[in-house]
Image 1 (cartoon, helix red, strand yellow):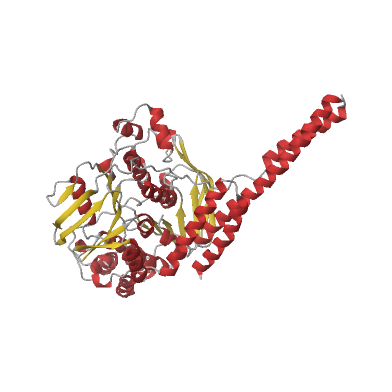
Image 2 (spheres, rainbow, N blue to C red):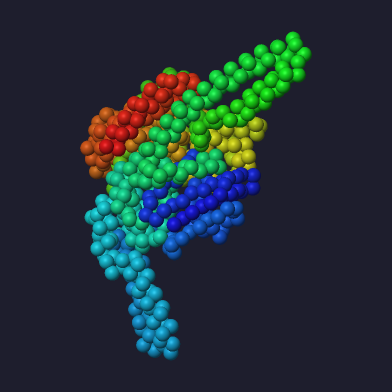
Length: 582
């Protein structure tokens, strides 16, 4: 269906793809992964609109006459007075109206055959998307997504997450030859994430999806395209198998590399002895032996096992460095807070956050979490008290609030108080921003890169209360793990809005659950039990946690060149992976 052969594409001073090749077969559910800034969104746009790009190589698309697309950035149509059901059937109603218009045109047409041909084409297109059953299909998709109770609700009244699912349903109903979705999971709550999973798994068409969501990666795809450092690897099989294969390959290659190095060292010792003999006895035979051995060693250096494929770009995220006693005992008090827009969202809620405490604000889309976080940041509500000695920093979903997108990266950090360019370049290299990107406008960066820049600015400050609104959104898997480590190591307090189960489970002390217009405090343990009961499989998530622990240990052992112990842990990891698949 889709075949790319030796694609090469570059922006000025920035090569994105260097002779990458891949195929997407009809009916496959393919996921495209890779570090932030590697060009995933550009690649899917190139597949959809190759005429917009000057690239080398071939891109063949056979049997694909229509494409569907779901963007990572969707503006909620709050001004539309239309029910969810009617919104989803708009394309079908339009096509039916076109058919009626052609019927009317045939009654008076001079060239009846030409109009009849257009009418038949319209009927064929309608039939191709199962138009005659669209009512039934809409009901089925809404039920699958967990949205069946919304069919008569106005589109303007659904939450942001529900609206995003409607975009997915709308595209799936049209049965495109290829449906491309760019991070469709961003900002979805747990219930909507499960709905997206079910929509993907029941879809019979061909999918190409960009996502960093760990839950979807493990549950939804049968092919992996991994884009990293201008290269691409394709893997036929689920992501969890691919991930294990990569870990296993790293261990095997380090073992092979160690054996190669041992052999090279032995040859160097032999060469030293030959050199000593040649210096003692002037013999052409000794000279030839030495030259042959040196040449052989040079070849061995070229042939020895290389580093594993696609070394990921792992950012080093550092939150503000603080003394453990740098904050007052209580950093934040909220007493009797209420907020309403068209309806009451939160009523008379109260809570406190202590020094060094990590707290997650969790709840369904549209329940007022971000509004509360912003009101704390603005600190102009009488019910909110930020205590003396507390400095706050805010990470926003709206990048333009914290970053001037018309500026270059270099200028943005000049204005943030940095000195010479070399200082900025050295600091941001730890966040995986190469020197050649320093003069790139922030508007040109990916969503994940913009989040990393926000974190980089926060890290150079002195805030002892961090207000983080969906901090893992758009971050790649390596950056998500790096952020979790940074939050765990931070000596200040954190209040974080998040729908990412893994981040909440891995790095917060307790949870503030927003429900029914109030806030219910609960421990992390109680939160996990609730998630197990209502959303995800407990045994699976416990295995996922065990898998992550083993992977981190293996990575640590490989950094210490202890491939033997890493190999033993790989066997345990394989047992866990098999358990997750069973």
